[in-house]
Every structure is written in C-alpha cells, then in structure tokens.
Length: 255
Image 1 (cartoon, rainbow, N blue to C red):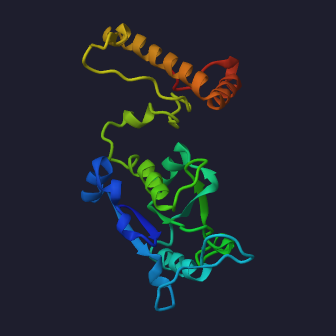
Image 2: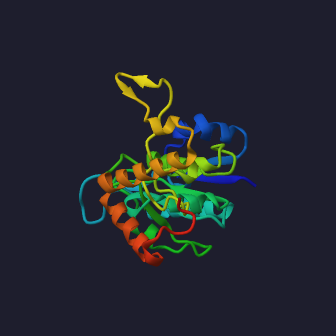
C-alpha cells in the first residue's frame, strides 16, 4: 500500500494542484503515493451544508464548527486509523526536514485544512476514537487564507522523500537542513552548470578540477560559511554539536 494523504477541506477542487506536476505529479500518476480529499461540507447536518458559525464572545469573521469538523476527522481516521492527523496553522510547531522525513517513512497522513478565522478549539483539545490528537504544524510566521496551500507545502516536502520520487539517493542527503550525518543541518552549498562563463562570472575552478577531495572540502566550507552568515541560529546549533563531539572533531560521517 503506497503512502496515502487524505486532505480534509471545503475546497477539494484545489487538489492535486501543484502536486499534480513535476516529480510529485509523476509519482502520483505512477502510484508511488496516493491523494484523496474529503469535503468537510459533506459532514454538515443542514440543507445549506454549513461548516461555520459566528465566534462565541463576538468578533470578526466566522469559525469552523467543532461538530462538523469532528465528524469529518473521525471519518478520515476510520479510513486511515494508523496515520498522524496534522492541521496547518501559524501557531503550530515549525515544519522541519526531520519531521518531513519521519512522515515520509510512515504509511500516510491526514491533513485538516482550516478556513475563515480558524477551527473551534475543542477539535484540537479532543482525543479522537483511535487515541489521536491533532498535531498543529506551521510552515512559517505568516497567515494564509486557508490551510490548503500550507497542506500542499507539507505534502511536497514529504512526497519528494518517498523512495523512487527524486531519483539519485544522494540528492536529499546534501540539501539544506539534511538530517544526514555528514551535513548535520547545514545550509546547502552553491550549485553551478554550463555555460562556464556568464555575464563575466565563471564557475569556481575547484569544481572543474576533477579532484573530488578538493571539491568536497570546498562544498563543506561554502555550506558552513552560508550557514554562519545567513542562519546564525543554525550555525550556533551546529557549533554546539561540533564542540560536544570528542575533542571538537566532526562526528562520524562528516568529510
């Protein structure tokens, strides 16, 4: 059974969207992974298929109802009882490469997409029939119109890690935030290709040398420098891990 994602949304026609193209789309068409949608409106109890109501205590906008959303989540869990349920929300834990990797190693995921002012808090407080509570995940410190675009980001970060999607096994191991031991969370080094010269700028000579040891050392130095300058938070964590290694030496697997 391939990795299967089920998206709970009031806008099912948004999917697969970008996920139907490029590597993810090819893998979807080839059955490497599966994508299903559940229309939250199908779980409403009135003739208008209402999913929202005015916020308790007053205020702007509308809030998605706990009873309607809860029924939809329970239905999804009944179909996939052993996968995590994730709601994209700005207040959630930041999405990391490590979390994406862990999700890719499972059998699937259920993604709950909110709209309006959000979802009734009781849905997040509730423990569902299989003992699951909804995991809240953020893709950044900003607000979108709904959870659908964020769900696509989460899915793309996961699907590309599924076996057979990207192709070369080493592609993922040397990317930014890689959990591979040899790169240890550094940002990715710069890439170059033909032409050799463009607008007065040339490919660094070391990359044309054919000396793989020199190339590897250059790439690590570039990754370290970029991380130090662009992401001091990641650099601080990297330095702490390096200092924690015996005599400050790189950990096993590092070039």
